[in-house]
Image (cartoon, rainbow, N blue to C red):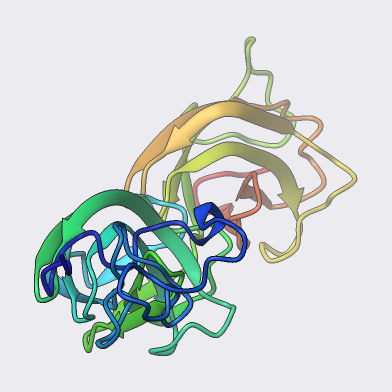
Length: 292
């Protein structure tokens, strides 16, 4: 008895199990058709013998802008439809991000899933995917989402979203300001009781990711534009400090008046540590409130 048109027996036999010398089925017709064999004593002779699965996005929950390497809570739903003439068992779905709408080898793999969907021709199955992050190495620019479905025979089908997401590179950029806390005015040659004059330095993060680690240096300056690098009044290396985007933190620095006597300005510079740091922020305090 022939298998029904959408029977899972079609194409799911094993060619390797056919005894040597057997080339015909029970009716005397070819045993192997289109490179495959059915389960049973008789072989269907016509019709497509493989599944052909096609993916489509049913739900895309992603922010319009994504920072490479940052955490995401994105959810995707892909519906896979069997458009072939044979039963589909295991189907794999891969989700990619790419600047184009086809897989060219430079795409970023976001998620992957494989399961036995048991699809008859025309049947559909749902694949859900959670996207945790994009690779830190992702270049900035507009990306399409692409869904790739792989059928039991290894054939692939790809569909892409028409909308794009903007990927930006992570960076941290410092801002800095400071004020003299004690005393309000310091004169050259003044005798200040320990621990000496102190200032409050405020460092902000104008970047898009959390800054980790800060270096702050205090120097005198003759012109208010260039620090005297040979004289370091105070220096802070804060490896464990973090500052979130848009936030600020303040730090206290103490210096010796006599060591600072070479200039009429205090010059502070601040920089973040790590590969995402982009530049150094500086600020000066003039002799309007500070006399050396």
